[in-house]
Image (tube, rainbow, N blue to C red):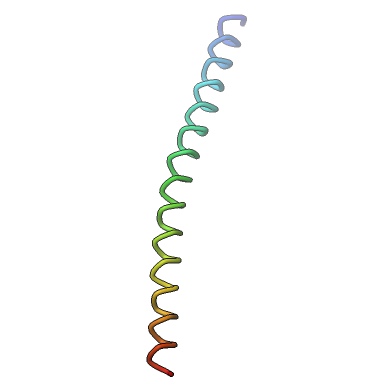
Length: 53
């Protein structure tokens, strides 16, 4: 019983660290993707405004 509980705690700790690592990596990729999308979107808007005027 105690050994099973210890293994379960170890698995939960590994799961938490894995989720934290996955969140950090995905947040970094999401930030780069959002920055790239915002840059292209702003470029598109400025291009449309220049073409309109």
